[in-house]
Image (cartoon, rainbow, N blue to C red):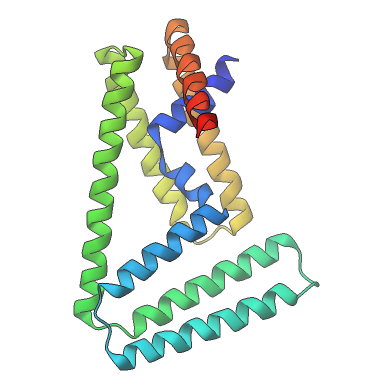
Length: 208
């Protein structure tokens, strides 16, 4: 019970990048990504020529994806790898039609989004510290654990030598290791408090 509680509730409060990464595989995640891309594109003030080029890129990508989905001679791993490769090609093609100023604007938006995420994580950390009654020593240790986790996560994310399946397994192992470290840091009373938070959160979700 202790392991399950920590795994579900504490990671929800921390909202680490791994959870966000996993959501991208679902419908909700894809919808959010699509809306984000449309928002970014709208703010770039693309010229008519760029809009036409972007339309061509999207159409080409759509056709390639449709053809790939018809292929019944490849396994799930190969399908995922090819889709990832097509997405990478589309991203590269899109960036290829942009001016230096537009690329700089995208980078600026990415930096702002990253800063916003940091601020949100800091607020979650403060809330968790207050709700669970973490000591200063626990808070300090948790901050160190989080930074180590994020560093390893980003390093793994950028590792081009691994295919999607191998990378997914390593993400899973990293995630599990972090949960175990969190579990060992908490007292039994804090774990019980987390269990109460979990039940309360589940009740509010079911009431919607």
